[in-house]
Amino acid sequence: MVNPRVTIITPAYNASDLIVPTLQSAREQTMGDYEHLVIDDGSTDNTAGVVAQAAKDDPRLRLIALEQNRGAPAGPRNIGIREARGDWIALLDADDLWHPSKLEDQL
Image (cartoon, rainbow, N blue to C red):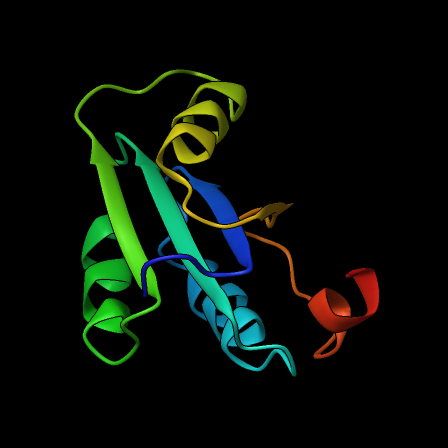
């Protein structure tokens, strides 16, 4: 996917127990023209592994693993914004869920 309509940015830190439903809520969007960047902020749990496994089943999902924790979600969000290829940015925290038509309604 070269130029998706939306880039979803999810900063994550030690979210391995929470992130699977978050990823699923993005996958269930009625508007599927998106890429999903998860920026793992130096987690000490298996967050990166969980996201990497999910990315095997969804080419729109991309993991960006940071070696050092930034201490706040703003740093990983800004990295995601720099890496974004979409025309629009949507922020989805690692412990949040979206209604299936969230992107479609918002656009």
